[in-house]
Image 1 (tube, rainbow, N blue to C red):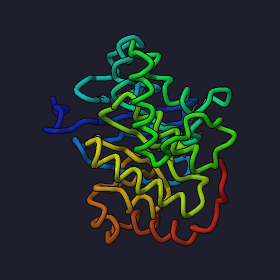
Image 2: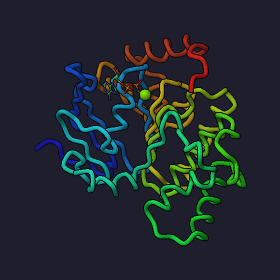
Image 3: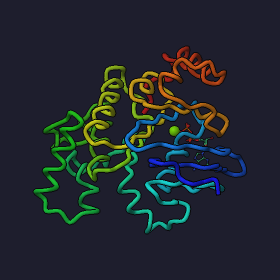
Image 4: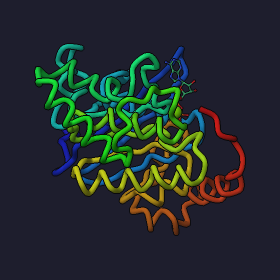
Length: 260
Ligand SMILES: Nc1ncnc2c1ncn2[C@@H]1O[C@H](COP(=O)(O)OP(=O)(O)O)[C@@H](O)[C@H]1O
Ligand SMILES: [Mg+2]
């Protein structure tokens, strides 16, 4: 058996394949993300970044291969058994979809009320702590519609850290934000890293964020991680695919608009 977990690996993919309607999107992903690091999966639109992340919380299952997260082989777990994994691994979605009918407090408290029997006082204290961690102390009473795009993302992050996850997955956390808020999100990812000692996985096509936050970077292309290394090594890499992606992404920096 060659698939033994690497020492210290929090997330480990071995030969992960995933198809939709006969089209293979992941074609043998090998990935080893170690405790405490921030690993970024860089890749173009439609390359399978979100699909990779969904495998890390068992929202998708591979057609073939092994997905180990925090020592559990996710492919062997049923929905019930995945519940603790989803508490320990927090996925912060691209859209930061808040519940529009709930205020900020209720949004951040949601998982705590769902998964703990904490008294309201304790819930309130944790909500305040999480909002403080994302630089939004005191906005509990606001409704989502009253928040800017950048604030919504940060409330989404506050909600994502409420359960003290060991792993945080960020799906395109800066997409749709203006440059000032983009760098604020980068700063937030780094701050959470040092304060909470979490392992973080970021997926993005944005180079600035990637090199701002990452310890290591992997490039996803044609369904595989075609290159990986430290952020510095990747930035200076002469690998054809890496150069093509980095240079191409720079050229397209001003494209894409601020979709939500
Ligand atoms: N639930 C799904 N059903 C069918 N096709 C999907 C599904 N999720 C993703 N795909 C397809 O898989 C490919 C990769 O998607 P995705 O991981 O979302 O790309 P990105 O790198 O932009 O996040 C795309 O071609 C997408 O259409
Ligand atoms: Mg995506």
